Each structure stands twice: as structure tokens, then as C-alpha cells.
Image 1 (cartoon, one colour):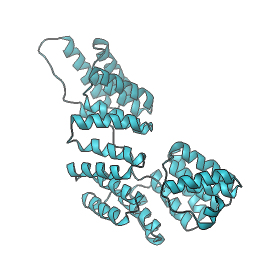
Image 2 (tube, helix red, strand yellow):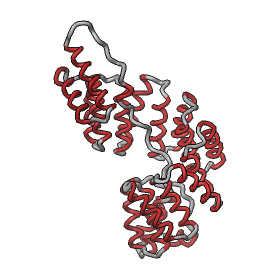
Image 3 (cartoon, one colour):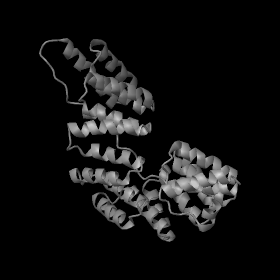
Image 4 (cartoon, helix red, strand yellow):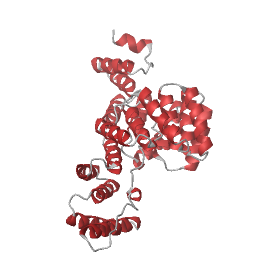
Length: 347
């Protein structure tokens, strides 16, 4: 199984275009704004080197020009350097503490870096500053979801939907949390609302497939995940979820091919490592199962039933103490999947 959503998009340079204040004389402020405009135009043309040059020229004239610092942060973010992006957004906020775009950008970067409490603090600041911004509540819902704070996530996504009911992503994530709570009827209702917004959104079918799989409707799950993949054939999450469904069918070779392809596309998807762990458990390769399940835990310890599968791998490998520790954590998290035989192991 894999998360059918990603954190909300960064607030890009497009949000800043039009924020220029020109004056009639050729003042330093005018020069700074001209460099910003040139940088934005270069970025629109995908010329990141030239964009960075113009932003740096703006900063040479005004070292605390928050718009340029924010945009440089976005350049770093797009290049995959999240640490440098965080530094730039932080400098932008030091120069302009109430800069909403930088707050949202830093929060979303913090989510990517799994710095959830940093993200939450920035989002709370953004909410106090502008409480009618739907995307802020959406991002807050992502943070609560990652922290397994599902009631708070439901509330945050609900607020986002109340402010903007036309965003299909809000509905899908609301449904996802209800799915995590095993509220399948609530999840289905939210997915129906999502389909009214955009019936071609593949995440709707991906989520419906996972619900069907959990309810034992495997043939329905297969049909639904295939619809998602028809719309988005190379989506790593959808491929991984088809692999998960094929694991439930004991079609192990096909499942392995899907999971491996998913990991080739996105080698940082902890859910794919979890599913590969399930594959190894089914193959009775317990040492490999433990190895990849621990990789999943390093990437994202909040993954559903991860501790149950780790406990199962350790139990079969004769590591009783570790197995029992993982089983206790599984029960604490409310997985509710331990068998009587597994429970007896830890008595």
C-alpha cells in the first residue's frame, strides 16, 4: 500500500508575480525590482541559472530582499536541495516575518524533510495571519496525518474543503485519513465528492482500490487500481499498490515486478519497502524481510501495520524479544491484526 497523496505544492514564484512596486526615478528599489522581474521571467523559461543570477543581483543591492530569498529557496527546492531551500526561506522570514509565501514554502519543505513540528509551527503562524487560506489547512492536515493524529487531520482537511470544495486533492486526502481510521463508508462518501469535482483524478480509483482490498473485494480492487494506472501508468504509488493487491492474490512474481518498478521510479517510498517485506515473508525469507522492513521504518515509521510485519519477521527468525517489542507497538498503534498464536509468543 502507498500513500495516495503528496504534500501540497510549493507556493511558487507565480504567487509573487505582480507584487512589484515601481517608482518613477531609477532608485535602488527600482533596480531591485527589475532584477526580481528578470529572475521570474528567466524561471518561467526554465533558465534556472539565469534566474539565480538575477536574484543574487537583487540581493547584492538589498541583502534582506525577502522576495528574492524566497525565490532562491524555490530554486533549491526544485533542484532537490531541501536543506538549502530551508536556509533561504528562513532568511526570507528573518527579513519579513509575516511573509506568507515563505511560511508556506518553509512548512512544505519541512514536511519533505520530516521536520513535522517545524512545519506545524509555520502553518500555525500562517493560520493566525490569514485564517481563510485553504491550502494552509490542507498542509496542516498533511502534518497531522504524518504524525498519526487522525482526528486533527480530519478537522484540518474539513476546514480546507469548507474554504475550497473544488479542490479534488483536499477530498482525496480527507478520504485517505478516514480510510486509515477504518471508516470505509466515510471514505467512500468523500471519494464520491472528489469524483464530482474531477472524475479523472487517478487517486480516487487508487484509494477505492485499497478500500476494496481491505474489505476482501479483491476483484474490485484489481479493476480499480487498473483504472488508476490507465490514467497514470508510471505512478510509483499506484504500481506499488497493484503489487500489494497481487500479494493478496499470492501472485508473487507479478507483485515483485510491480514493487521493484515502483522503487526504481521512487527509491524513497517506504510503503514499497514494506510491501517488499511482505513479499519476503510470503517467500519465507525472513532475514530479507526484516532488512527491507527496517528500511521502511527508517523512511517512515508511521506506515500502516509496519510493526506487525517487523514483529512477524523477527518471530520467524527466532528473535522473540524483538518480535514482542514490535508486536506491542503494533497493538499500541491499533493495528488489531495479531493472531492468537502471535500473542501467545509474548506471554
